[in-house]
Amino acid sequence: MIDRFSRTINYLRVSVTDRCNLRCRYCMPKEGLSLLGHADILSYEEILRVARAAISAGIVKVRVTGGEPLVRRGLIPFLASLSDTPGLSDLSITTNGILLEDCAEDLYAAGVGRINVSLDSLQHEKYRDITRGGDLRRALRGIERCRVLGFNPIKINVVVIRGFNDSETLDFASLAYYHPYHVRFIEFMPVGNAALEIGGSFISNDEIMEKINDRWRLEEDGPNRRIQDGPARTYRLKDGKGKVGFISAMSHQFCTSCNRLRLTADGNLRACLMDDREVNIKALIRNGANDRALEEEIRKVIADKPMGPPEDLCPSRRKKCARPMSTMGG
Ligand code: SAM
Ligand code: SF4
Image (cartoon, rainbow, N blue to C red; front, side, top):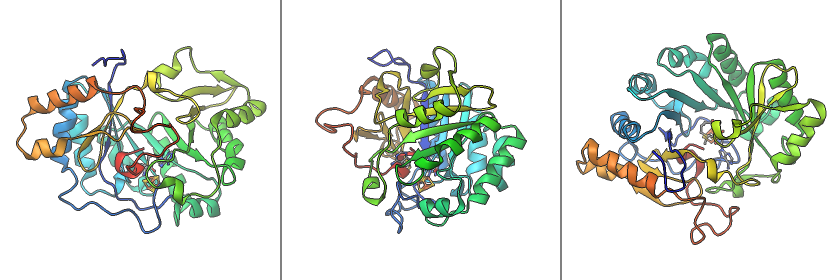
């Protein structure tokens, strides 16, 4: 479906849980966030209804995320049902990778072909520190398992923080040089309470790109790559096996090419990450709305999708928005 700014909206991100087995410092406080109760989150059946209505409205790509999606029980059969939906051409997942080694095979068999793993340090101590207790070896074993199984592409997402992991950007780039991974550098965004929990400071992707370009030559990955790949600017490293990408939500506005909708764990449909306006789709479902009514509501949300945060709600792109990232899936 085309919105009023001529953008094709074809991508839905679904947060299946706000729970997580890590506590990344930029995402969650150490005690976790006030967790939603079982009845507060959408059941898999409800998510399937929303996703299928969205597919009828023109969505062709769905990414399942969280919280940590792999901690929710029953995920694999849910993914298998979702991937069977006619009209869906691409099903992917974003995970911290901690539980990946054990379930990669089932994910693959369920129809998930593409995977994003978040990894903010390649040093054991630092990884443990930023995740508040995570074991880097487990995440790396999960990634390796996915490579062996044939997931393609495997994207590694790195949130870069000056004074914490900016010294590792060349190490991450060399991961993309020697392996067929897409390493994507993500600018920290002050959403939810994130800004309060983080040490270090903001670093722009332009600075990181310059550093990598000095070491390896960055080559544009096709003329229209930026539009095809959503918000990431993607490059090849000369003679390298993988790619690097830059998701620069703070320093470069990419709203003109934004193609996505979000379904939050507690059942709200959200058209813009930085705009707190949402439609309570859970209430509609639980009040008996039929599939046609759901699709109509989704079409309305697409039609009203803003071009960036509205002035009255988010006067500055740097102002944090209220909802924590873990409930809306990054
Ligand atoms: N738990 C999974 C994971 O970590 O990949 C999926 C959910 S997580 C909220 C999705 C993505 O959002 C991760 O890549 C994470 O690094 C990113 N993220 C979380 N908080 C962020 C923030 N304040 N700024 C930028 N990215 C953030
Ligand atoms: Fe959990 Fe992902 Fe947030 Fe880290 S970024 S706390 S892994 S939801």
